[in-house]
Length: 142
Figure (cartoon, rainbow, N blue to C red):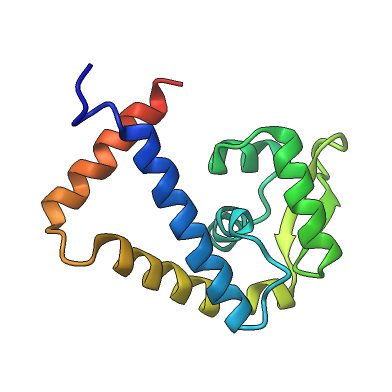
């Protein structure tokens, strides 16, 4: 056992908790307290990809289908997204943002930038890249 490296899960957990608190605070300050940090991945994916299917979204944000379904349904309920049957395959739904959902983009991009600024602070770019490479490697192990 190596105490310098064996604390990785604990560190990731603490970082995640602090990041979530930051995001929740930022969302509330902008009148978006009805959103949760977990909605961020989904919304950012919808800003980037046009009309993905539910299956595509599960792959993009690396979450299981039931989680994505719950998240999408909440965004639909809040008026930020809409679900439409896929014309090519009626069994699938395509997800898109409404005008109200698209209006979230400036705030969410700003929150993301502020969060990353806090996370990386004075860390040099090469070290940032190393951290991301290492965590991506670990993520692929699952």
